[in-house]
Image (cartoon, rainbow, N blue to C red; front, side):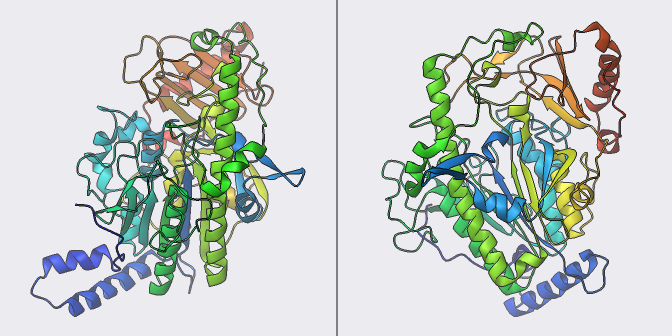
Length: 551
């Protein structure tokens, strides 16, 4: 049953659990016991330094953000300015950017499951977004009750999830709150991006915030908490306001916190123009976006895989759609950036910035005409699989770019290293904290890349858009295994073809070297690495390699 605009309850899952187990005990005794358990957990999980407080973490994840959007610019007073200044200056210039960060499996649900579990898709089981390999696999797996927020909550952290969770969430049951989350604010059935009109699950209660996709926001609305008159109800503003409220609550309680803020942007909405719907105050910004991509439509080389070689040239209509979508994506990310600015401002005003890590990442990338692919992700190529990762924190250098590499498998281990919490189970990923602290350090651990179609190994299948129509120039869904190590990227498709790129000399992946006779030693080495990674688990996913020199 839908409820109106509630006053969010305070308290912890520990208190609720104790209350259920001890119905004859007074609420006051239960609270005292919960407090004692919390103090004990904090003492056990605190870093080794005497007097050190556990660090807080705010992890901000966006949806389908190509790395090319990170430094997109808009025209303002006749000159180009960054569309995301708060992120670039408040996080990037105050922290470290990992130059080669990848979505191990570049599709929403599997990538998000890897973030929480630190496991590769072939180990956590959520291989695609759809049944029978989608959310139900995650929901019924052992990892559902043993992952990052569960471990942090047991260590005394106040944990909050705000925004999109995973594709497939919110159907059965609608009031589901996954284990580990003390505060839960998540839209139902948010497979794409419902910027208006979504029903929120707030701590197990279904709440209609009063927004409507048809009416949307008025330009004069205020980005304040949704219960206040005149509040903006765009999902970006809703989620930002909940995050601010959660950080303030954790500060009042004097507890360390982990806030995972999952924005819908810049995922397409699918109901109007190509791309997302920006907040009302930013819709005009799309007209001032400066394109930073090349639509010269270069024909694929003779060694390109079949599914790329078969892509038809981009039509003028397709190029126009790409430009429109890119502009709307940048404008929607400007709204995210405003939210980031508000969060950074709150951390600074309260002094929490001195002991809080802020992590910014996307779940995967997106094509904008590269390789004649106008729309989609899934594939291991750079526009789809490579994504931004920016981190600032109390012990990180400022304004550095690391030449090292990592993937979504490494996010949970990295957060645990930041907080000093030891997980009870093995993960496939590794902590990146050492490389963030020392940006000149370059890891030799290969980055696992994999994709799964759920439709058999024989041929790639064309992506079906939201209306179920097959359109030209769309990304395909295909089974593959591969990796990035040093300057080499190698991909082996189940249907028989392979790709080898020297990313230093060929960052656009235009020259597939896999069929070149002189590259046979490199391909032989790469096949051995893929054989191990395709079935790796735990430490076998983290074995360093020595990439060969280019022949």
